[in-house]
Image 1 (cartoon, rainbow over the protein chains, first blue to last red):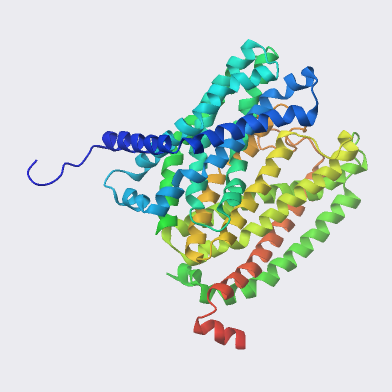
Image 2 (cartoon, chains in turn green, yellow; image 1 turned 135 degrees about the horizontal axis):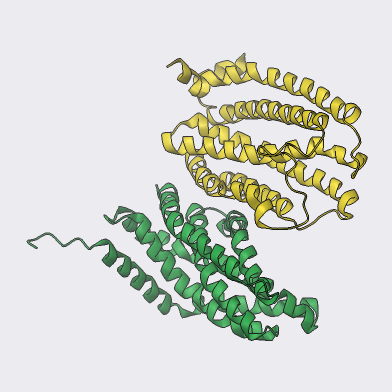
Amino acid sequence: MTGATQRSTPSQAFATVVRRDLLLAMRRRAEVLTTLFFFVIVVSLFPLGIGPEMDTLRLIAPGVVWVAALLASMLALQRLFALDYADGTLESLLLAPQPLGLLVAAKVLAHWLVSGLPLVIIAPLLGLQFDLPGEALAILVVSLLLGTPTLSLIGGIGAALTLGLRGGGVLVSLLVLPLYIPVLIFGAGAVEAGSSGLGAGAHLSLLGAFFALAAFFAPWATAVALRISVE
Amino acid sequence: MRLFHFAAPNTFYPLAGKLAPWFFGLAAVLCVIGLYIGFFVAPTDFQQSEAYRIIFIHVPSAWMAMFLYVVMAFWAGIGLAFNTRLSSMMATAIAPTGALMAFLALWTGALWGKPMWGTWWVWDARLTSTLILLFLYIGFMSLQAAIDDPRRADKAGAVIALVGVINVPIIYFSVKWWNTLHQGASVSLTKSPSMAATMLTGMLIMALAFWMYSIGAVLVRVRAVILERERRADWVRQAVRG
């Protein structure tokens, strides 16, 4: 290379953005833990509100865990672009020669690793509080593993659209929660179908289909939304 | 180029003003005919007796709620792709009517559900997805309301409308996907309809009436949107002065 700096390939750019966002998240560990504790607290509130009968709790456990995961991942959305928007990094990303959709996908992946994956890991523990049997716990984890990335991907669109708006936090929930509903239905449904002997395969396949669809379209839509919000 | 003559707000404004009364008139006439058929001509259902007659409001409003969302997303998409101001204004004008239709469908559904299923609300696929549709309309409207710059509001609204349009086929296929209480679709293109011909006629006429009403209401609202957005233009000053 003579003089000119070498342009990084798309995969290098992807890895760089992921590494940067993970590094930033590790420097602010408290924020990561906030999402996780929010999830744990919301799930723990339900037995207090509904009563300690184990039979009831076992029935509602998948729904409760899933709704809490939805809320937690929605709360975490605020951090996806807001800091980069505030310090101008986002504009550099928009100007970068690599496709914006790819960089957005990298940011969403990093975001899921710090806000979604911890929920998946702690979910079996919360399931035990609700006396879920082992098989149901396994299905719960798999469904969350397939579903929460979809939540982060869809949420990215809402986060990008509400960037820098008054009351963006409430607005993003209005925009994003209705779109989360299919994931919720099939995520919680997978555990119930598994426990009732129907088999969770169909539900998990649909969750996988949602993920594939969202992974393809959402980064692109998020990129369009970011350009609209920043211009 | 005649076709695009009316694509500018200043030429569309008077056209919409002329057309709107016609659509309202058509809606009123069709509504009278449809309701007459619905209440006096259509036979009493052997299973559901008289209570089924709410179908003449319920089904058309549910259809319009779904259809208007697609139309709204279409205009919003055109506005996003070709940067045409009027298309985005159309999308903004359609949203409240669509939300009204979704609300009507839910309300009449509740009134119908009470005598049929013994409960106001059932967490059934189609009820739930109509509720989601109402949420999508509300999300679209509140996003546009939160953004001060109209151009950004148009584009951001277009993105969320196009994302939400994925939901409309889910509503449509939900009957097949989720196996629940709601009766299957009453009208289908492949099988002969499971209802008396007069009932179907009344329902289709009511659907047309709702359609005409929606067009009229959207035209009136888009005029208001045009006036608000173009309030600094000369032609608005002249038009308002009369």
